[in-house]
Length: 372
Ligand SMILES: O=C(O)CCC(=O)C(=O)O
Ligand SMILES: [Fe+2]
Image (cartoon, rainbow, N blue to C red):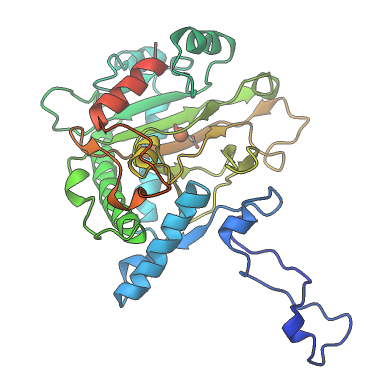
């Protein structure tokens, strides 16, 4: 359902004059647009885009076709799958392995590295400490956190050469090669972000290099996530999820999932949640709030959440859901970048919706609201 078009039995009138036997069904693939498909949950799909067509395009016109697909995906859904994205599978699997080794450490070893400041946004976050939500009301978030905390733990890593904020690395004898593995992954994701933003610039009819000098400072956040096995009955409680419904804050999120599943994306048109299952060889990419704001909401920052894995993975009669691992790379513009409406995203009939804000003002404010 995600990438393939459904067949339909509709035969266009221009074909009817030909000798088509009465009961022949001519399948039509790929004719409905993404915009049409997303209007209904039955046909909702997250587009799957072959990104090698952008990287190795023989002409600007060919490049622009993939760029248009990327932008169209963010306009209609806010989420896309990328295949042939250029990050070798060995790098992804090794990063997952080091992440698993980290979360397997004793609790007090992890607590020693505790996250302690939203301006730094680095370190270990134990289960129940973050409650992602769209609310910015402190009392409401505190109530949600105690009633239905997120059932996940995370490790947050920022750019390593920051003069003010230091990453919190486990000791080498706790997890060998953790730091070089994460820094290599960080750099690799940074480079992919820069290329996808070039595609977005082109798809918005801006100069391809428009974002280059606004996103080169690597103010990103690499988040390792671990969702421990949990009783199904706990996940099915009112308002409870592995990660509650939220949007992300930055430009784009590059999301790497294991094979367990449970990620759901809100269909922006029907407001119903739809699964975004792991597809081998792909990554999920979603637009964040700053990109939506930058583009005057031309590009969508779509709500998503992580719930119990589908019943094909866990039998409904089982009482435990399996543990799940994922890695989110939250990409940000430079912290001093002024996020004010992009040149092509306003005009007569489309007024500017947002005041200009720096990345830092926006992100630090959001993070301060969601953690205790
Ligand atoms: O674990 C996932 O698949 C999604 C995590 C997520 O959306 C987040 O951390 O912002
Ligand atoms: Fe998210």
